[in-house]
Image 1 (cartoon, one colour):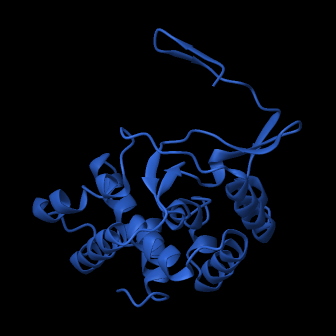
Image 2 (image 1 turned 60 degrees about the vertical axis):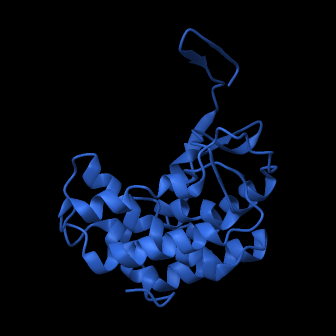
Length: 211
């Protein structure tokens, strides 16, 4: 951000501004994962302002969804994801200011400055929380990101570079995927049995002993 006034924001323009999705979509997912890890490693953790919402705040959609009677997301998934999510919230270590939505389309390349993260949401949590969005992207390719071997490979690379706990990464990603499906319903978009977030949740759940 360069300046702000009267509700308008002036942002720098990146050239060429190509997103990280392009690499994964043309068969270079391993390179894309390495870039993602290196970019996160270069983002210096900052003191988190008190007004920034924490991870627990972002999980508040579980309860009203369960009470709504909606059955688009199976109850077994919702219950498991809610339990995992708040167990993780209660046991976080080294909380910091996170981007909050760091997926492939929010990493752009600039010829001068290299790969840069854009469109931060801002959330307080541990670094393992940050990786869930990237693991279920690029969103156009559930046939890629919902494959157990791809999930394992990505998590291995992220763990090597960022020294994160792979089990906590998997469990956060599982719970966040179910939450993403709930948010989709809240936004008025139907969620069917072939929903990409639920497909990912089931694939990653099999890796961390969740339904």
